[in-house]
Length: 421
RNA sequence: GUGGGCGUAGCUCAGUUGGCAGAGCGCCAGGUUGUGGUCCUGGAUGUCGUGGGUUCAAGUCCCAUCGCUCACCCCA
Image 1 (cartoon, chains in turn cyan, orange):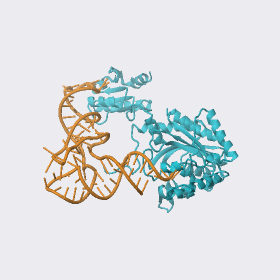
Image 2 (tube, rainbow, N blue to C red):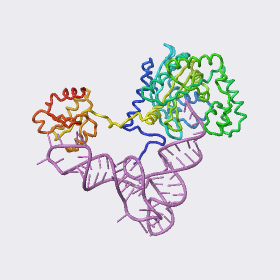
Image 3 (cartoon, chains in turn red, orange):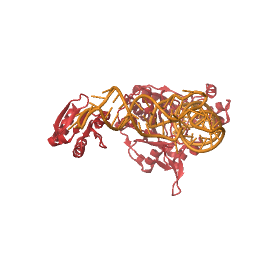
Image 4 (cartoon, rainbow, N blue to C red):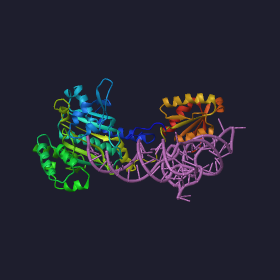
């Protein structure tokens, strides 16, 4: 082998690749039913779009983005996430000057320069929704429900919804200061001590036991909310409960960046290994301004397609793998003239909506029938010189082995009829 | 960036104290000059991840390197 996929990436191959398609379809369907329009943004953007949004509070910008200079000297970054490009597009095209909220969904690939592990790769695929221009707890609840319904449609039962609020620019600073005060009193390594100053909320989800043990008495954001944030959060919770959505309040659930406000949530699953989130999102009322736009509240989520497939596999939701590109009818030609005629017949079948394949490469009858068997087709159409002379073909039921001669002109209708009953 | 495990056929893997590179599955063909699945027989496919070293001899031992994998850090 001379080449392989770049480090940290992988290929989706049939038949497993069908699972990724199924996830994209199922996770986007609820959004389409709720008035969300499809948006597709470039795979790369101006580096500053991501750099400004992320800020200096983490080393994401310097270490985890695929950044390069293009031939025109512009700094370009491969899209590491979907929200900033969507907000950029909304602002650029003035979508927020029309009917609000602007509701959009997307599906695409993202790129992050990280060390790979289970469920985390340098190239990954997400489906997401964003709703901009309204600050309404019902919108937060709607967005969450779209994901809940998507997971349910896939048959997933082990997805848990973790819910929290991060407060707003009124109440968060006080909480942040309180948390910082607490963290300064702990026995932490230098790197963590530094994080406590830059990004104190993130220290809360450090997994190291020696850190967690010290966090037992840490101040919680839910105890520092202003009245408006408290009421907002209660309303979101009430709406979810009324819709029959169970959730777990997790006051340690955080986002590291300043533009996140209020509602924050994650969907976690136990079958994924260490990277347990299959999706996540929240409200980001500060993002628009951070990238140079007007005040424009927004809420949304992104779900990981790859991780969702892993979760489904962990739940055993897929049975026997189907053959790649399953077909209903398989053509078996015997001889050159028959092959040409059969090729036309297959074209007719496909145009009539019947999934059909045939034996290529001049295999013998036996080999071609074996191919028919492997294809998963229900019927084989066998055409040889003898049949051709009679103007008919042999239609063979591959399950029962029964075979009948059918006039060539009637093959398409005969097969369509048999396949629909 | 840190640490553990692993690299042998398309896939899953075995390979003894260093001594002719293997099995199962899959694939192809034959057993039926026009009939698949089960069965039988045969066949093809390897830079043993790569590069060095030790040795009469290396898949096996040593060093380096690349990759895969899992976890930590990080996680928009």
